Image (cartoon, rainbow, N blue to C red):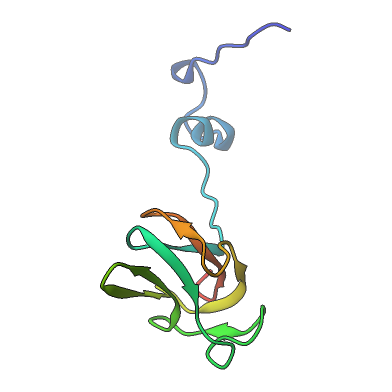
Length: 108
């Protein structure tokens, strides 16, 4: 296999393929991840709050908790969307930034 090198200066600047190579693509991903705000033990919300996958979750709605010694931090959805599933088990230790919940954003 031979590597191909493209010099963007030699092409037509109006060529969309060259523009994509230079500036990256413009993909809009509807799936979003709600992450752990801090380290601790993940606790899912009770079923009466979010009953099943596919349920609509509002921006700011509590979707879980991270429990650490002496405190319980709410995990809130930052956008409205459909709950696609938990990415952490109830009682699982998590680190800051660990994905906990998948949402399909209504904002696109």
